[in-house]
Length: 111
Image 1 (spheres, rainbow, N blue to C red):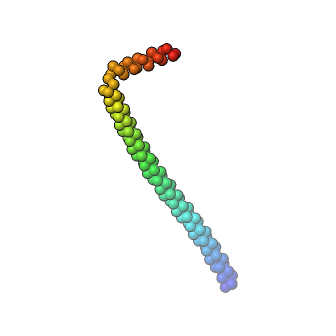
Image 2: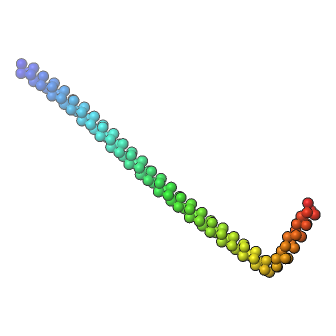
């Protein structure tokens, strides 16, 4: 009878052990999944931050290059206008008009 009691108690302890073991394994898997999700979320947030920073950098560079191109254009435009004014002064407006008219006449004669 003591042996029966011993066996029953042993079986009961084994069942409890198995149940507790399953519980711990489930808890471990849940915790592992939770950590994995948190890691992925943080990784995605880091990637998004990196993307946003790169996007800002590209936009700033674009704006700077655009401003630089516009000011270069304005500067070159002023230089051309200044050259034209110098030529106009040197040759006189009438001479330029006469050259333009001669060019137009030649163009009509050729055409």
